[in-house]
Length: 296
Image (cartoon, rainbow, N blue to C red):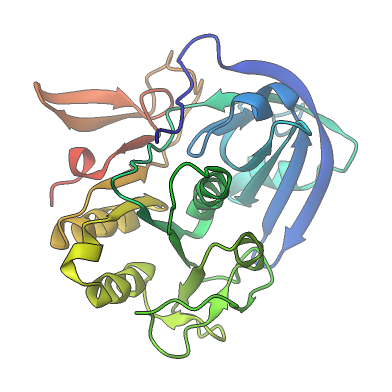
């Protein structure tokens, strides 16, 4: 099964989005729900929206889409205040309107021969993993058996609770989960070095390694890794994938201006069959094969 990627042209919509909800969480984190039916209709896991955060700030901000409901016409955005732009966005109130450009970018591709997706999200890289997990619950053509592991050094942007889903191979006592994923029947586990109750004490990649080590070789061949988070984490994820000889897709985070491929300000060097090439994170990505980006 393949999650359909949006084409570069004809799939990006510009619309005025009304703020339906704006919830604050510890660590200056926010979940923003926007009525943006055109964006919601085309969004796929891994795509993002380019938002006008305030009328007085000309530069838009690229933010990953955490959920999209095409029938109800809304998208959810999770963000953390970094700089004056997102601080201005945090002041926006329910009922206000902001400009939404999206969805933008190439999303994740699922493969039926790898029915055990391992989703790894770090910090503000959590949203695409939630979106991908939800997409898996809606695809009944393949018996997906995902595991979502998330890491954060600040409080998670949701109220954690002990999971109701058993995950063999996870260390004893690691039971903290994202309630939304639990409700969907998707197992999740959390990692942190900040001593949060029920969380794995260490990096999220260490937690993923513990689970992968517990699998027998035949089961491990069913795993594919999907990840989003800070660049050092993504490099560590790719090294983890190489250690266990697994395919790995990563969603990169880069500063960008136009976000539609015109300015080439978000280019990264990527290995291709014909040699190194500069690719734009906004429209050629943000999802890339991890091995094409990192030397591992």
